[in-house]
Figure 1: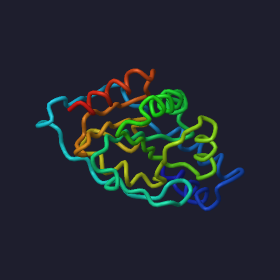
Figure 2: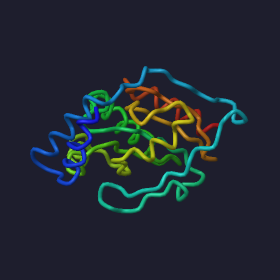
Figure 3: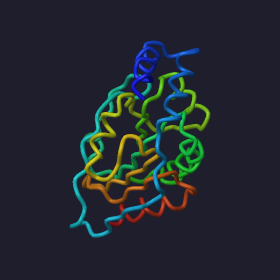
Figure 4: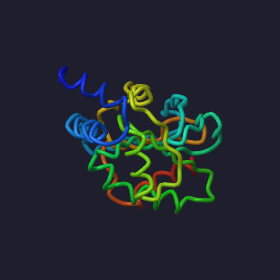
Length: 189
């Protein structure tokens, strides 16, 4: 594992070609798919505060979840090199389209990826919501106390309008209806 660290550091210096392919190859071998478990806190009194998420999107624009106060957030941790992330992408895009017009904001958190690979992924799947670059996994680290590891991807967290954690999905989503139903419940509470 330590031998991969210099390769990863070297690959991070360039974002295209052979080095980018090597970064994605290393990442594919390092991720641990979530176990598919779902945790939900339907009683608002049992929910805990979500951390404030800040960073830049894939185009370099600032993102700060405090700007979406009063809005339900759907935060999805993903990487272009992660097969379950690829499989769930159409469901998340469809859910975002279904919930358009509601006080809901989708936000991706791109883990250990190159900018080119991440942008290609979003273009391929038609992702219209922002994704924060989190190559080092620092944003994911903020959720370790909530049972998530930066290596457990994909993971999706629904955060209620008071920015408390409503539900956590560890693993890929396998339909649109499930996430829409969770967000609907969060909107009602």
